[in-house]
Length: 205
Image (spheres, rainbow, N blue to C red):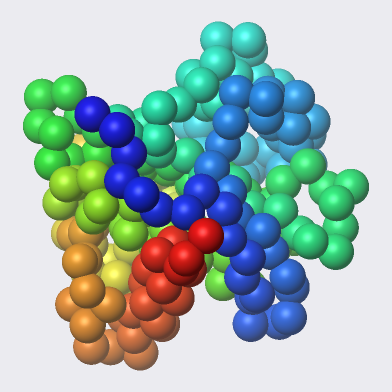
């Protein structure tokens, strides 16, 4: 099965004017990830990997970059005005083998760029690509202490459940139309991001 005919790269602008390029992760990005991980705080890395980490192993780098963009979709974001920064964030979903309509998802945003709308944009990107691939639910495992991210996912319509000690599971519906996002202030922010991303991915090449 091949990936749908969506663009693999597009440009966007955050609400503070930061100009971005978002594109599919490729195997050649191993060194970019190896260098980029050094820029994240220990807390941010712990919340993403659920363990203390300061570097990525060769096995991890293969998993994170050698993706088929069908069952494992991964995108990265770069600052157009600061090419010296390896990356601002990465978002991915991996289809669950036992249920191809559900995909486990994760994202990470560089500390200095958090709270600026990049996380919402990346999550919208995951939603749009998941909808195109027949995924109905994005499942995030989140540390229970990460209340801000949990609140964001719930605000976007996610269903919260206890997973294990210290861990929560949030099942976020994949919206096929931006109008399906919750009709709340935070939900409408997400809806606008969905609309933007969908338009960007379907622009003529």
